[in-house]
Length: 112
Length: 115
Image (cartoon, rainbow over all chains, first blue to last red; front, side, top):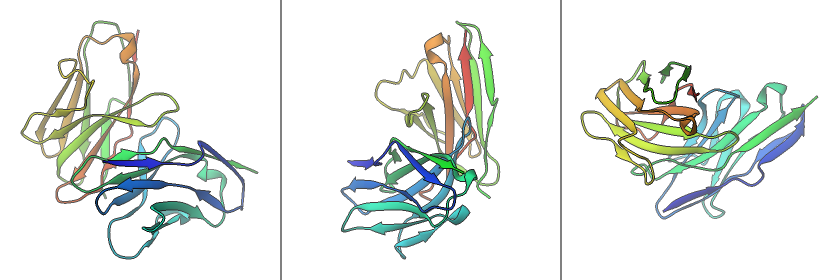
Protein backbone atom coordinates (compact mmCIF):
# COMPACT_ATOMS: atom_id res chain seq x y z
CA UNK A 1 0.00 0.00 0.00
CA UNK A 2 1.12 3.55 -0.61
CA UNK A 3 -0.01 6.92 0.63
CA UNK A 4 0.88 10.60 0.41
CA UNK A 5 0.54 13.31 3.03
CA UNK A 6 0.78 16.95 2.08
CA UNK A 7 1.15 19.15 5.13
CA UNK A 8 -0.90 22.30 4.85
CA UNK A 9 -3.90 22.67 2.59
CA UNK A 10 -2.89 26.30 2.01
CA UNK A 11 0.52 27.97 1.96
CA UNK A 12 0.87 31.73 1.65
CA UNK A 13 4.06 33.48 0.61
CA UNK A 14 5.04 36.92 -0.59
CA UNK A 15 6.32 37.44 -4.09
CA UNK A 16 10.07 36.81 -4.07
CA UNK A 17 9.99 34.64 -0.96
CA UNK A 18 11.02 31.02 -0.69
CA UNK A 19 8.36 28.45 -1.54
CA UNK A 20 8.32 25.20 0.44
CA UNK A 21 5.54 22.66 -0.07
CA UNK A 22 5.81 19.54 2.04
CA UNK A 23 5.16 15.99 0.94
CA UNK A 24 5.69 12.78 2.88
CA UNK A 25 4.97 9.38 1.45
CA UNK A 26 4.75 5.77 2.48
CA UNK A 27 5.51 2.90 0.16
CA UNK A 28 6.50 -0.70 0.72
CA UNK A 29 8.69 -0.67 -2.40
CA UNK A 30 11.03 1.94 -3.89
CA UNK A 31 8.78 4.78 -4.96
CA UNK A 32 8.45 6.94 -8.00
CA UNK A 33 7.48 10.42 -6.88
CA UNK A 34 5.85 13.28 -8.75
CA UNK A 35 4.78 16.85 -8.29
CA UNK A 36 1.98 18.19 -10.45
CA UNK A 37 0.54 21.70 -10.65
CA UNK A 38 -3.08 22.52 -11.43
CA UNK A 39 -4.33 25.94 -12.44
CA UNK A 40 -8.06 26.71 -12.07
CA UNK A 41 -10.29 24.68 -14.37
CA UNK A 42 -7.33 22.95 -15.98
CA UNK A 43 -5.75 19.54 -15.91
CA UNK A 44 -2.53 18.63 -14.13
CA UNK A 45 0.86 19.63 -15.46
CA UNK A 46 3.94 17.64 -14.52
CA UNK A 47 6.43 19.80 -12.62
CA UNK A 48 9.06 17.18 -11.89
CA UNK A 49 9.57 13.56 -11.01
CA UNK A 50 11.94 11.26 -9.20
CA UNK A 51 12.42 7.73 -10.42
CA UNK A 52 16.01 6.68 -9.76
CA UNK A 53 19.43 8.30 -9.62
CA UNK A 54 20.08 11.83 -8.40
CA UNK A 55 17.94 12.64 -5.39
CA UNK A 56 17.75 16.36 -6.15
CA UNK A 57 15.42 16.79 -9.07
CA UNK A 58 14.96 19.99 -11.04
CA UNK A 59 11.72 20.72 -12.80
CA UNK A 60 10.03 23.40 -14.81
CA UNK A 61 9.43 26.99 -13.72
CA UNK A 62 12.38 26.97 -11.31
CA UNK A 63 11.00 24.31 -8.99
CA UNK A 64 13.04 21.51 -7.51
CA UNK A 65 12.48 18.68 -5.05
CA UNK A 66 14.74 16.41 -3.05
CA UNK A 67 14.01 12.76 -2.39
CA UNK A 68 15.01 11.88 1.16
CA UNK A 69 14.53 8.20 1.77
CA UNK A 70 15.39 8.38 5.48
CA UNK A 71 12.69 10.99 6.00
CA UNK A 72 10.28 9.53 3.42
CA UNK A 73 9.92 13.04 2.07
CA UNK A 74 9.83 14.75 -1.31
CA UNK A 75 9.39 18.44 -0.52
CA UNK A 76 8.99 20.96 -3.34
CA UNK A 77 10.91 24.22 -3.25
CA UNK A 78 11.45 27.34 -5.30
CA UNK A 79 13.87 30.07 -4.21
CA UNK A 80 11.73 33.01 -5.26
CA UNK A 81 7.97 32.93 -5.68
CA UNK A 82 6.28 34.59 -8.61
CA UNK A 83 2.65 35.65 -8.85
CA UNK A 84 2.16 33.11 -11.64
CA UNK A 85 3.07 30.29 -9.25
CA UNK A 86 -0.27 30.64 -7.48
CA UNK A 87 -2.01 27.32 -8.09
CA UNK A 88 -2.83 23.95 -6.53
CA UNK A 89 0.08 21.54 -6.16
CA UNK A 90 -0.27 17.78 -5.87
CA UNK A 91 2.34 15.30 -4.75
CA UNK A 92 1.88 11.72 -5.98
CA UNK A 93 3.54 8.33 -5.57
CA UNK A 94 3.57 5.08 -7.48
CA UNK A 95 5.63 1.94 -7.38
CA UNK A 96 5.61 1.78 -11.15
CA UNK A 97 3.39 -1.26 -11.06
CA UNK A 98 0.55 0.37 -9.21
CA UNK A 99 -1.76 3.27 -9.81
CA UNK A 100 -0.82 6.80 -8.89
CA UNK A 101 -1.76 7.87 -5.36
CA UNK A 102 -2.25 11.59 -4.86
CA UNK A 103 -2.00 13.77 -1.82
CA UNK A 104 -4.89 16.07 -1.01
CA UNK A 105 -3.16 19.03 -2.58
CA UNK A 106 -1.72 22.31 -1.35
CA UNK A 107 -3.00 25.65 -2.58
CA UNK A 108 -0.14 28.12 -2.97
CA UNK A 109 -1.14 31.74 -2.53
CA UNK A 110 1.31 34.45 -3.59
CA UNK A 111 0.82 38.01 -2.44
CA UNK A 112 2.46 41.08 -3.95
CA UNK B 1 6.04 16.34 -26.14
CA UNK B 2 3.64 14.17 -24.10
CA UNK B 3 0.49 16.12 -24.89
CA UNK B 4 -2.93 14.81 -23.95
CA UNK B 5 -6.14 16.37 -25.20
CA UNK B 6 -9.71 16.03 -24.00
CA UNK B 7 -12.90 16.85 -25.80
CA UNK B 8 -15.19 18.52 -25.03
CA UNK B 9 -13.72 20.92 -22.47
CA UNK B 10 -17.15 21.52 -21.01
CA UNK B 11 -20.60 20.11 -21.61
CA UNK B 12 -24.06 20.81 -20.30
CA UNK B 13 -26.70 18.15 -20.71
CA UNK B 14 -30.14 17.25 -19.52
CA UNK B 15 -30.73 14.59 -16.90
CA UNK B 16 -31.15 11.16 -18.46
CA UNK B 17 -28.97 11.76 -21.49
CA UNK B 18 -25.57 10.23 -22.20
CA UNK B 19 -22.36 12.14 -22.64
CA UNK B 20 -19.15 10.94 -24.26
CA UNK B 21 -15.76 12.38 -23.37
CA UNK B 22 -12.70 11.69 -25.52
CA UNK B 23 -9.13 11.50 -24.34
CA UNK B 24 -6.31 11.46 -26.87
CA UNK B 25 -2.55 11.18 -26.58
CA UNK B 26 -1.34 13.42 -29.39
CA UNK B 27 2.35 12.60 -29.70
CA UNK B 28 2.83 9.24 -28.06
CA UNK B 29 1.23 5.85 -27.76
CA UNK B 30 -0.43 4.97 -24.49
CA UNK B 31 -1.05 1.39 -23.58
CA UNK B 32 -2.73 2.59 -20.42
CA UNK B 33 -5.04 5.53 -19.82
CA UNK B 34 -6.73 6.58 -16.62
CA UNK B 35 -9.95 8.39 -15.80
CA UNK B 36 -10.26 10.57 -12.74
CA UNK B 37 -13.00 12.60 -11.18
CA UNK B 38 -12.33 15.73 -9.19
CA UNK B 39 -14.79 17.44 -6.87
CA UNK B 40 -14.37 21.14 -6.04
CA UNK B 41 -11.34 21.86 -3.90
CA UNK B 42 -10.47 18.17 -3.63
CA UNK B 43 -7.87 15.82 -4.97
CA UNK B 44 -8.31 13.49 -7.91
CA UNK B 45 -10.26 10.29 -7.44
CA UNK B 46 -9.29 7.44 -9.75
CA UNK B 47 -12.34 5.98 -11.44
CA UNK B 48 -10.84 3.38 -13.73
CA UNK B 49 -7.75 2.16 -15.53
CA UNK B 50 -8.12 1.57 -19.23
CA UNK B 51 -5.84 -0.76 -21.17
CA UNK B 52 -5.87 -0.79 -24.93
CA UNK B 53 -7.81 -3.71 -26.32
CA UNK B 54 -9.11 -4.99 -23.00
CA UNK B 55 -11.80 -4.22 -20.48
CA UNK B 56 -11.26 -1.36 -18.08
CA UNK B 57 -10.54 -1.97 -14.42
CA UNK B 58 -12.87 0.03 -12.22
CA UNK B 59 -12.13 1.26 -8.72
CA UNK B 60 -14.35 0.17 -5.88
CA UNK B 61 -17.62 2.06 -5.80
CA UNK B 62 -17.53 3.14 -9.45
CA UNK B 63 -20.46 1.81 -11.47
CA UNK B 64 -19.07 0.24 -14.64
CA UNK B 65 -22.48 0.22 -16.31
CA UNK B 66 -22.84 3.93 -15.72
CA UNK B 67 -19.33 4.98 -16.68
CA UNK B 68 -18.52 3.11 -19.87
CA UNK B 69 -14.88 3.16 -20.89
CA UNK B 70 -13.52 2.17 -24.26
CA UNK B 71 -9.84 2.13 -25.22
CA UNK B 72 -9.94 1.07 -28.84
CA UNK B 73 -6.55 2.36 -29.92
CA UNK B 74 -3.19 3.31 -28.45
CA UNK B 75 -4.08 7.00 -28.66
CA UNK B 76 -7.76 7.17 -27.79
CA UNK B 77 -9.89 6.34 -24.77
CA UNK B 78 -13.50 7.40 -24.26
CA UNK B 79 -15.62 7.75 -21.16
CA UNK B 80 -19.38 7.68 -21.62
CA UNK B 81 -21.54 8.80 -18.74
CA UNK B 82 -24.83 7.00 -19.34
CA UNK B 83 -28.17 8.31 -18.13
CA UNK B 84 -26.48 11.25 -16.48
CA UNK B 85 -27.93 12.74 -13.30
CA UNK B 86 -27.11 16.01 -11.53
CA UNK B 87 -24.90 14.17 -9.04
CA UNK B 88 -22.66 13.17 -11.96
CA UNK B 89 -21.78 16.82 -12.47
CA UNK B 90 -18.05 17.08 -11.92
CA UNK B 91 -14.66 17.71 -13.46
CA UNK B 92 -13.43 14.64 -15.31
CA UNK B 93 -9.72 14.33 -16.09
CA UNK B 94 -7.96 11.68 -18.11
CA UNK B 95 -4.31 10.77 -18.16
CA UNK B 96 -2.18 8.69 -20.48
CA UNK B 97 0.90 6.67 -19.68
CA UNK B 98 3.43 6.19 -22.49
CA UNK B 99 4.20 2.56 -23.13
CA UNK B 100 7.03 1.41 -20.89
CA UNK B 101 7.05 4.53 -18.73
CA UNK B 102 5.83 5.24 -15.21
CA UNK B 103 4.76 8.85 -15.78
CA UNK B 104 1.16 9.86 -16.40
CA UNK B 105 0.43 12.91 -18.52
CA UNK B 106 -2.88 14.61 -17.93
CA UNK B 107 -5.49 16.09 -20.19
CA UNK B 108 -6.99 19.53 -19.57
CA UNK B 109 -10.19 18.10 -18.10
CA UNK B 110 -13.87 18.17 -18.99
CA UNK B 111 -16.40 20.06 -16.92
CA UNK B 112 -19.74 18.23 -16.96
CA UNK B 113 -22.90 19.90 -15.75
CA UNK B 114 -26.08 17.86 -15.69
CA UNK B 115 -29.30 19.84 -15.35
